[in-house]
Length: 508
Ligand code: FAD
Ligand code: DLZ
Ligand code: SF4
Image 1 (cartoon, protein in one colour):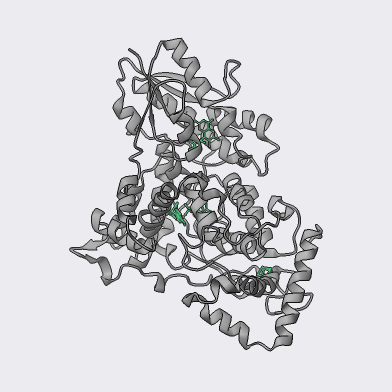
Image 2: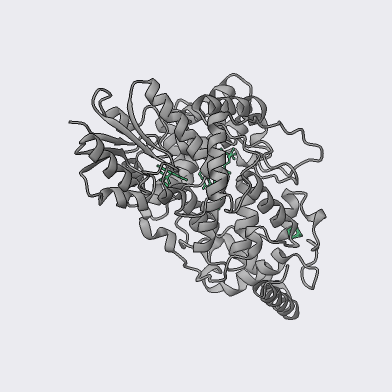
């Protein structure tokens, strides 16, 4: 008898495990644009449009490959509004008695499908380099789950950047050579841009009508929407940006949202690109002498290391992970995260860019929007929902560990060995934001003082009990303790007043 093969919006890979299990001759693939998925948070309109456009084109590809398909568009009058509703409708239509699905990347959907009122067989998602089991085995019995050690095992297992048993270039990690501040007049490559075809335009019209009020600009829309286009983005990155990726990985420049980043996370996360193929392409460029080792290693580590590691942590830690709040932060997310005005230029730039492009690079997410939320004591669940909504690459399995763990330390240190906090000095060193700011990055207290300077000490002071014995934070506390008492009092008082103005809704 016929079976239904569910293909989710972020499972757009021809070698998907569920498709491999299925029989083209008798089974029916089900794909559905549903309100349940489009509305579990108020996604950026660009993200919804990207998912729907890529789904429609992938569906066509499956049909060309000979699959029977039940594809439901969001505005189909029969649309049941949820994935299970759609599966039931298609089961009735086709007489199917079983569903095959590749495990979804999120607890919410995993539980929904496990409890579906129709027999459902879930097969592992093997579009990752490490399986869930592989990660669990690595984690078993370890006290600390540090990415670096997991990454080295993955290097050994895949042979990526290995010379026999040794890491290529003699070191596992070349970050020491990376993280250069930006230079004036950096020559930054133009990213590729894909003009919407008629199929994408139909999606854009639909998204504008239904989700035009969500935070974020739908236009201009120039994402790749097929595997072929995503591969062009990868090739373009390797030729024009990868050589400098390591050097300027942490740099931030006003009006240069992309710098030397790859811009491939939306495509990796949708399944249009495969993580191992991306790593191999970077390795090949290094082998051919086209890129230096610090660039190739730094880039491969983000995918083979971080991306695989955070997925492992997400499933290891369980569905309650997103509720964690060990620092008991409870302030509401300020209105400027949704585009209201702020005098802090770094935040205005990072958020403005997010609104426009549904993109910000890692250091903007970690050291500007994330750093601020952590210093200001914002409720990490609200921070988590914000990151899940505003980025085109946001799926809970990758977003939550990065936000709740790496950025907000709300998991108590599962991912990060110390909180990622900094004063304005770091942002000033790594960007050109401060010169266009109403605050003074060199002022440590007083009305003009950069809020990051005030809140940095406020954070350390209010969490002294938790962090003062952390070896990696000893220097920070020593510096604080060396200041004279009057100065410390003035800083804490100014920080408290600033937070009050923030809470009162003033444009801070
Ligand atoms: P590049 O800087 O060019 O890096 C190349 C690739 O490495 C990325 O495409 C991505 O696949 C991978 N990568 C890099 N850093 C990470 C990381 N920390 N975790 C996982 N993969 C990584 N990434 C997402 O894909 N989805 C998210 O929802 C997401 N949320 C984040 C939230 C916060 C608070 C932070 C600090 C980081 C988040 N990241 C997320 C990680 C990272 O910021 C993005 O992957 C990256 O900015 C994507 O842009 P790029 O493709 O140009 O990346
Ligand atoms: C993100 C997303 C959106 C916006 N819409 C759909 C949809 O209509 N149908 C669908 O199958 N998937 C969609 N997705 C992707 C899912 O939310 C994603 O599969 C889960 O979050 C698991 O990662
Ligand atoms: Fe940001 Fe402070 Fe620099 Fe202003 S002075 S841009 S608030 S770091």
